[in-house]
Image 1 (cartoon, rainbow, N blue to C red):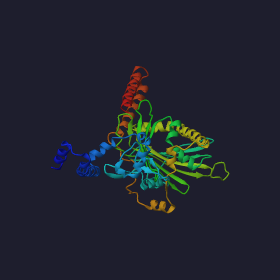
Image 2 (cartoon, rainbow, N blue to C red):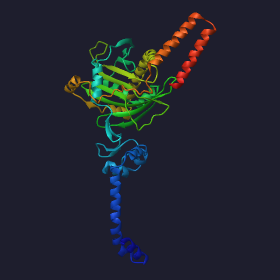
Image 3 (cartoon, rainbow, N blue to C red):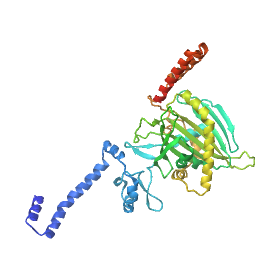
Image 4 (cartoon, rainbow, N blue to C red):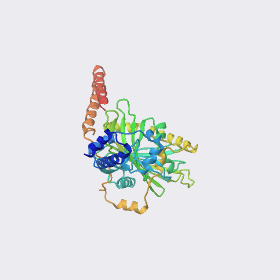
Length: 422
């Protein structure tokens, strides 16, 4: 009846100034109800609404061009601005608002998930001190140049792909420079010709945890590979434990090409060591690397490819490192990725001893040993390779004419078909 009365008075030409208090008294409760309804609906929004919001992104450039809006975002609760181009709005030390990635504990399907935790630190600690109860390492290579020395080993676990361990000592190099070099994806694109794309998805300004997406180039008979990598650095004394591993990230959908690599682990211990010059100076840098991944290629073929290309890749890294050293010495500013390497978690000796004595049942460690059934290379591939190789050898032994050619061409055709499926 109140609404009908107000409309009736307006239609009769009553003075609007006299009616304004009545109109405001009528409209105010409606707007209060609307605002409360929106806030309650946002807080209790269903899962399908959360997924829709995650798939809807707003460009950061739209916000950066409106300073007043950025200031407003700093002053209001986060629920008013739940998404942006690169993450949540944060307030830096100067009090201004800056766009950063989300923290390392991100909200995913209503649950908090840690990308890289102390369990991963314990895992690399056990690998360094050979306390992970794995098989013995088999030496593969021992080479050196004037600027570095390199030793590599391999082992074949009962389940999973081959694992590699290497020790590289770089002369005239600091651990900090080495740490920044490994983290600097922007500069990596300049020296690593296998890296096609590198993008930071999320980052934590408190402990330096990052989630990045890589796309790497593979040989012509394989499609390119996509990696979603979680990474974090711990500092213990003058040593840096750098963990990088594949992580689940459902908000980035899988594609046919490039193909997603789920099982990926590549971590380093970086520390200063004495130079081989014999001057007693700790001017060299030692890098202990532990690496394994399931690239979707039969493991025997992958081992052959790694062995053939290992030394060339090591020399390429050394050349890239020296370029990076000169780049920084020239006064060039640090990239954002390299800056994030400076934000790491300090861990004391006592805490490391506690981790050493902790059981291996830490739930935080997720080294990615689970392989999806549709992408795990089965033992049948190895058997097929052995059968095919035996057929070629037999053909070459019995006949050197048309039979040999037919077998070789048939095998080549089989490998071509296999390559299209990879």
